Image (cartoon, rainbow, N blue to C red):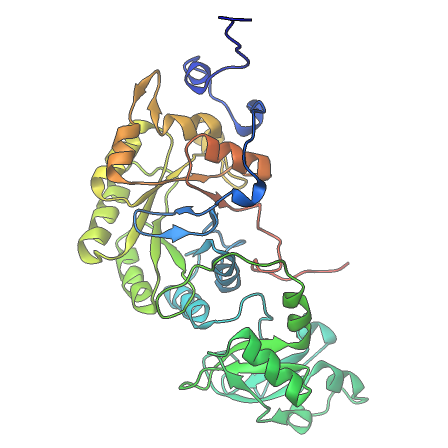
Length: 401
C-alpha cells in the first residue's frame, strides 16, 4: 500500500468548481476519524465582529417567529433573537422593552384585560392560570387585580361583574427576581401564580406560575446565556431601508437593542448600503447585520459599507419566492461556499478574515443536518425561521379543533 493515495468523494473546491448550484439536500459529507469526545465540542461562535454567542443559533426576524418571548428564550439558551418590524414602531419598541426587562426565560405570557372587559369563555385564559386586570387593559399600566381560571369556572352566573370576583392587589414580586427567588415566593406563599411587576412603573412584566417551575426544573442544563453587562438579555431587531426606518432605529437604540439587521431580500443595493453606512456613522457602537447576499462581489460591497456580519441566502427560505418570481438567487450550499470563494477558484476569504466579518447562513434550514452543512461550508451562525415557527415561544396561539 506504500505510495497509494486514498481518495474518497470530492474536496469542496473541486465540487464547487463544477459550476452547478447546490442546495443542502444535494450534498452529504463522508465520515472521518474522530479523536475527541463529544463533551470537548465547543459551539461558541461570533455573531458579528463584536458579539459572541454560546450557541450558533439566531431566530429570524419574521412575524411568525420572533417577538419578545422568542428573543428571551434564544438569549437564555446562548443564542439571540431578532425581533421583526412587521408592526408599528411603538409596537416593536414595546417588544424590545419587554424582552430586555425579563430575567426569567420560558415562563407564561400574561393575559391582560381592562376592568370594563368581560371574560366570555375559558378560551380567554388561553394557557394562563389567570387574567391580569390593569387600568388600560395592557401591560403599560398598573395592575388592579387578577381573576383566576379556577375562580371563573366555579361561577354559576357567568354574567357576574368581574370586579366582584377579582382578587385585588394580589401578591406580586419585582420583575428583577431570579428564577430561584420567584420560585421561593411561590412555594412559601403556596401560590399558583405570581405576577412579576416593574419596580418603578408597576407594570406587569411576567406571570410566573407553578407550572413554569415544574417545567423549567425539568430542562437540561443550559449553556451560558447571552447577557449584557447589566444582566439583561441580548436582543436584536430588524429594520428596513426606507427613510422612516431611521426614526424607528432611533427608538430601538433607546430601548437597548444590541444588534440591528438591515432586512432586504437583495442586500447589494444602494438603499441597503446607504442604510448600513448611516447606522455605522450615527451609532458607532451598534453592530449591523447586512444582506441578504449570495455572491462574493455582494459581500465585498457590504463589508466596505461597514457591515459587522453578512446574511447569506436568497430565495431559499420557507416563505421566500425570489428565485421563482425574479429568477434571482443561488442554492444555499453554493451560496455558503461562494461567500468565501468566487467561482471558479479565486479566493476572497481574505476579505472576510481580514475584516473579521462572520457569515450567517439564512434560509433553507429544515433539519439539524442542514445546520452542520452550513457550518462546514463557512457559516458562523444559522438563522432559523420555519425551524422555530410553531414553537411555544413563537407568536400566535394554538387552536385545537
